[in-house]
Length: 453
Image (cartoon, rainbow, N blue to C red):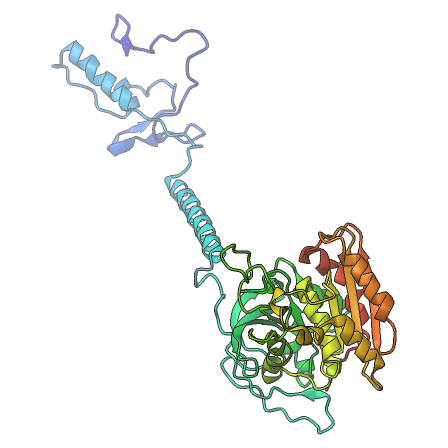
């Protein structure tokens, strides 16, 4: 702060063009009306106006003038401190309340974002309560209750659940709210205990179909087929595809049963002479009875817990690779129980090394020999087999073998076949599922029944 020789205040020197714009004094509103100064001071003229007559210029700054006894140096120091303390009020300065509100909003949004990320992570790793995996699933009956005791007419085509006691746990939930559930089945007839995954389309719980029996498709995987069945995974979209195909009029609204195919893992182990082998979905002497498990125990589970179709017209198999072989064999061996199959990239003959020394039993599970016997049998029921094979299968003999089978047995007598060759198709489930909708699913759905009352 500086003063002229006569003691009047002079603004500090600033280079040209850098002087700040005129500012109103503390408390001065736009329009220039005098306002009372803070701390009870006198009303002040507008900033830049001369002081009123007879009033000290010190009053313009909102502080009291120093006494005459103060030395000039102390007086100047005191005035400089008061000047430095002066903080003019700007009309565009945001109110303190709004600043706090903004901080609260930002903080709230941040917390919600972090909570969302945490919930997503916990759901991904299936940590309750952010996932319903493992929760009880009840199909067609109240949660935790028994199936409704709906009466059915004696001539009904529908079979009510006979003994709904299986405990189903949710394995995954689809976007339409349906569930893939799993249970541990202790096979009464086979003596084998293993997992079975099940799925029911949304129509199953629709009151419109409350008294209807649904067709069942038993879906078998290839590969190890143990300890899981890859059809139960939602990445292949088998369940969603069936719903889509049904809405398009191509498919029946199948119930899906997805059991393990083999009794143990068959991954190759140099120390285990029986590793790297298949059980061919068969009752190989001295081995777990996988034929009985697939064709009696698994269907029994579905009859006990779901509304199904009484006749074989509501029962089918599907599978790929070894599962395709087991599906083909089941329909040919038990045509009185199953009407149709979709066999994708299947083997045509049994090839498990576990058959060694059991040629008779092996022949009883050979699709070629079973087909010949069925054609020769009088009054044999019709069966429908939809093959699909990629033209880039890893086993180059797969397509020629299927074509040879169709040429020999297809569309002769009770055996009805169709073949879809998939351009660029490889030996995997990701190839087979979307192509099922291009013919195979429609081929078997035309001859099957359901929903029925």
